[in-house]
Image (cartoon, rainbow over all chains, first blue to last red; front, side):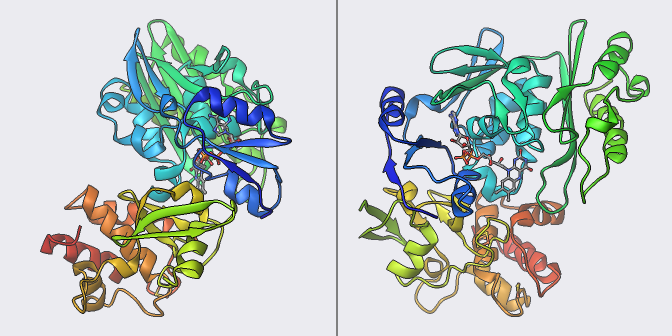
Amino acid sequence: MHDFGYHRPTTLADAAAALESAEDGKLMAGGQTMIPTLKQRLAQPSDIVDLGAVEALTGIREEGGALAIGAMTTHAEVAASDLVKARIPALANLAGGIGDPQVRHRGTIGGSIANNDPAADYPAGCVGLGATIHTGKRQIAADDFFTGLFETALEENEIVTAVSFPLPGQAAYAKFPNPASRYAIVGVMVAQTGDSVRVAVTGAGPCVFRDRAIEAALSSNFSASAVGTSSADESALNSDIHASAEYRKHLIGVMAKRAVAAAGG
Amino acid sequence: MPTVTMTVNERQVSGEVEGRTLLVQFLREHLNLTGTHVGCDTSQCGACVVHLNGDSVKSCTILAVQANGGKVTTIEGLASGDALHPMQEAFHEHHGLQCGFCTPGMVMSAVDLLSKNAKPSEKEIREWLEGNICRCTGYHNIVNAISHAAQQGDAA
Ligand SMILES: Cc1cc2nc3c(=O)[nH]c(=O)nc-3n(C[C@H](O)[C@H](O)[C@H](O)COP(=O)(O)OP(=O)(O)OC[C@H]3O[C@@H](n4cnc5c(N)ncnc54)[C@H](O)[C@@H]3O)c2cc1C
Ligand code: FES
Ligand code: FES
């Protein structure tokens, strides 16, 4: 790891200023992806701006029919939150299934979505629940936020401040984890609110996506037996030592069924 | 170079570090607390687990500067004098180690588990150890040791 200048601002304005004035500054949340990236010299920033002391990025609040979760909230905090467990238990479950306890104690929702790992859990949580991503300057619908492999709609130096999740009618997340890392080989978030059903898939492709065929099937009959098969184009799915594209496509249907059953359908 | 000050095993310490200095390097190389091990250096194995502000964390994946002002407990901070901590006693009693390389991290993870869940089931213990790898024991006696420590009731 190369050395860097280290900054620990306490306000969002100071964090933005530190980032702007750095030659090649990078944000750090818990460092659970950033530190391994620095060790491998995949990134060699001149400066690191640590968000760990920015009070405004913490906390979980219920406001206007949604849960707003600060960007620096750890996976362990989301998993243990009485408010999240009561309002969106699917989200508490998702957070509690990330990695291992030590990763959950440091890794954050903001860092996870900004990184947009193709096998990360939160992208499916955000898209499936129809979340809104709040940044220092605007609000972005989750459908527009995750744009590709490790790519998001974030502009240079844009800071995620919070994610707000509208309260669903029923929702559940099911994942088939890689047995070593716990990252998703396939993970599916299913949410039903009124007449609308959203089905978001992570792990299967280069970026989270909605499975429109399963959404349509569940919109007319919200039950596990109605799930049917995924509409995903197999040639666009991931294929690696862990699972072939064909197997991943199959898992989308299986995980969707498990999620619908867990959501009471 | 940044100066960090933190409480390690109830002692106030400070030192000059680089931005890139890992917490585990600060513990082992600056403070000579070599009980915390480095197995993988890639946040997989859990040999480096310590407590930071009451939570178990992988000290190979935290910068020393991120722990500035914090409260750290390492394996050296568990025993009182010659009296082993009840979790260390349980690992000893139930043969929860062979080579011992993973043991400091295992014990620190286990103590954190009981502080959050005083009476975990066997399944909960095994799930909690997701981030701790042991190449010797097959885990069985580690899980046994933690179960027994939980039954004794003073190992959190
Ligand atoms: C062993 C291991 C197992 C894991 N298993 C899983 C798993 O099963 N499922 C899963 O989903 N994840 C998993 N992860 C990833 C984990 O969830 C981390 O949360 C994730 O790596 C992000 O880490 P972080 O929050 O510490 O962010 P950092 O590593 O600090 O930052 C990640 C990236 O986001 C940027 N960033 C951080 N905060 C912000 C912000 N507020 N605004 C804009 N940009 C920001 C940083 O600049 C950096 O590019 C695992 C990680 C490890 C080490
Ligand atoms: S040395 Fe830190 S997890 Fe292996
Ligand atoms: S006792 Fe040898 S690695 Fe666990």
